[in-house]
Image (cartoon, rainbow, N blue to C red; front, side, top):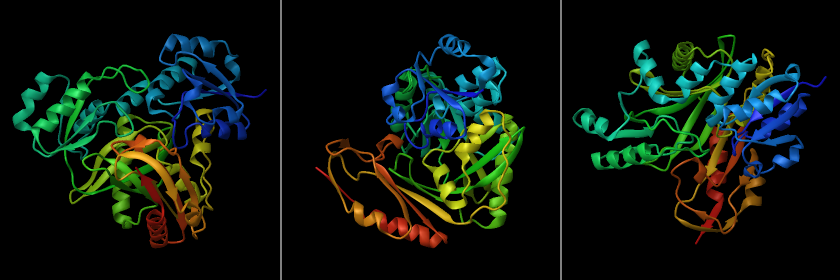
Length: 408
């Protein structure tokens, strides 16, 4: 009997629907539940069963799943931030392996997460939670500028911005409060966080948990662009931070995972290293985005997507002690000006550079482009590998300088 894995939507970028192919490689029948199959480029190539239904309706999803032989369902999962809470509820309802809805709700709602951190006395930015314009007026005298304004429950750095004046704060806060539905048509919590702006280098910590025990895969160095927005322009895995600093970061993140009671699967936690130590920005109860799982695969040989799928199916991870110890990095391609993409020069020359693993341009010729304000404005990426940190960074920098995006 072939066991089934049921996917509820997916990311439209990064590892996204690649999880379907990985599930099939592992011997599972993949069933994909979606509102709109045409949203996903390449979905048809996997030849999996696709069921179009209202994935924002718990009743519709329960009906679809109940039509299957329940004993044949190994797990239910998603690669989309927006459906983590939905999947947690379904997993609990059908008695499958996964994190509780309460854990996922805290991770998805950054206002709830900040309150938990405050109670646990873990280092974080000072913050104010805003649920109305009256709330905003009430805190005007107590918020130091500049600050960071962000929605409590969105994804992909949408509407996250550095604000240097109260007028900017009011404008963005009003915009977020007025937004009733997210990109997938789900109700938002219409809540805003005003956070202290923290100087410091930013990192993400990639962990994997099984029955509450968390194993650190590694720490990723993050690079940003698009100021005053916070758009990730590249990553290097693993970081070259001193061992004692890495240990403090790992210990801090493990405390945060225990705080939210994360039991199973991958997590991607964002932190800043400051003179006061490790400061927690957020914990995401999912695999990293931004192609970080691919960097880990190139660097170590570890296939986190495989482990995540097996975890959803109730299979404990077995870590390979004989991993590689290389470096991998990604540089995202972005526009420096607004206009239409006319051509991309020097692609073949870049592909021939030693160390280059991938070069992908997703933007179409003639497409309207702009300087990035969120992840969706990235036009493509370069991935490089090397035996040293320096070699990898230099390879990426050389490739990025060679690629020429002509915009008219």
